[in-house]
Amino acid sequence: MSTPLELWVEEVSRITRPKQIVWCDGSGREREQMVETLLAEGRTFRLNEQSYPGCILNRSDPSDVARTEQLTFICTRRREDAGPTNNWMAPAEAKDKVGKLFAGAMAGRTMYVVPYLMGPAGSPFSRAGVEVTDSPYVVASMGIMARIGSAALDQIGAGRDFVPGLHSLGDLSPDRRFILHFPEEKLIWSVGSGYGGNALLGKKCFALRIASWMAREQGWLAEHMLILGLEDPSGKITYMAAAFPSACGKTNLAMMVSALESSGYRVWTVGDDIAWLHPGPDGYLHAVNPEAGFFGVAPGTNPQTNPNVMQALRQNSIFTNVGMTPSREPWWEGNGSPPPAGLLDWQGRTFSSANGPAAHPNSRFTVPAGQLPSISPHWEDPAGVPISAIIFGGRRARVAPLVFESMNWQHGVFIAATMASETTAAQTGAVGVTRRDPMAMLPFCGYHMGDYFRHWLEMGRSVPHPPKIFRVNWFRRGADGKFLWPGFGENVRVLKWILERVQGGDHATETPIGLVPTPDALTLDGLNISRGAVEELLSVDPDDWRREAEETKTFFAQFGDRLPAELTQEHAALVKRLGMSASAR
Ligand code: SAT
Ligand code: MN
Image (cartoon, rainbow, N blue to C red; front, side):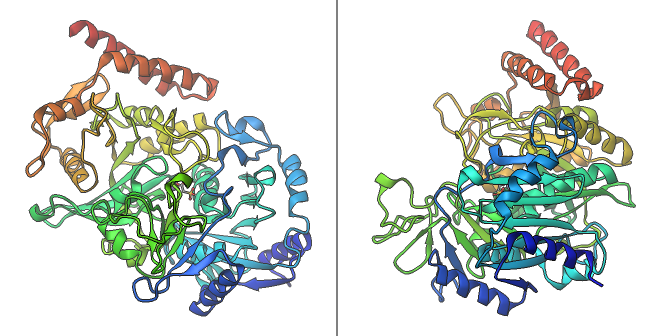
């Protein structure tokens, strides 16, 4: 008798008609075979065996370099369940339309079956998926980003408790590219892209879009968050999760070498992109990182901004769309060294600034998490780590202060739901446009965002010790257009204030938007920053925030009667506080 998994694989092979089917086990031998296949295809190169052992560089199709949100759909039976912030297609229509693109799509090619586990082996919070793909690059990448092979097959067994994901490169044409999610049947279909979150289906498609749906059904949260542990001088580690939109510094924050290390504050990395948060027996929310690797943005990464990852990516890593030096080392803008003569750009041309940067702005490294010097000893703890603070952040040149704290959980959900950020190269489209990105989940929430806010409110009520909620902005600029805050390892100074607030410290001032540090509350020794800059960083301008409140009102309006009343109340309370503070000043 065939298992549900075998039946599904048979079914998709009848549609896609591959020349052969390979079941992947995640072994070193298999990885080597995948590399050989990629080398033969001509878009992948082995890097310098001395300085980058086990590393390869891959060049994607130039039209396939980032997630394509406009081609990403949530296919629920009822349109309103996908909500106004998602693209929607009816399941039957989606299957008919996109099924045609899968028909015969793997003819003459190998179909790889990749069973994978999201989350640590043996954790009650882990979930299994199976990705069927015709891309050896995807197989090699999944081998870093997830636990593939027996860890997953053991969990799936003869059962049906896995998320099937069908992926084919198709013809890579953006006109025939679709990333489809069927949350009601926990199914993913992706065709026409081989890049990142479009193609590594365990990541955004499963661990966020499908998992957010599962999490609402089952009473947990699937979030676009890094997880870190902040060790204090007593040796105690306090865990925090932080949500930022793509390419806004989650990886660097999660892996930071703390500027306060000599006084005993040190950061441990649990995850850099996704957190699954479940209520734990101790009354805290416990977070696991469902992933097993890091898929980080390369440009700007260097020994100053992220020394830990610079060390980790020296072996067994995949580089995508970066430049390559004549000594076969990866190169990107902002890596700390000038472009060498004979540099090839991400498309394999001799580098010329007339063609744009050598590395694509969304070029990436894919690195096994266990190689990171700052990896937490608890990163694979089956019970997860207890979360004391949740931080939301965006990229805002103006308006948003360096850090502020919410008054309580409900207000925290409000400040998370109203966050905004300037767009980056992580998604196709214009860069630098400010858009509302609630909880940094705008592209990743698999259901109606009004219902998502309601679920967040309920989660806070259901756990005895909900985390405190904060908002940060490392990207505020002064009148001269320059960043006011140095960022990177110095961000630990903000984490330290957050830690002190968690521990009951009272160095905070109330403003209309929440609690900001008192002028002397931030530990700034050893940092060359003027008092004026600190005051500007922490300032809250009522006029700016009144405008902000107007915009949020419009943003909220699209959720109609699915917007929880609590958020309308929070909005009204903010407007009132802003009004009062304006007349008081
Ligand atoms: O390409 S991914 O979606 O995995 C990266 C990102 O946008 O966060
Ligand atoms: Mn991300």
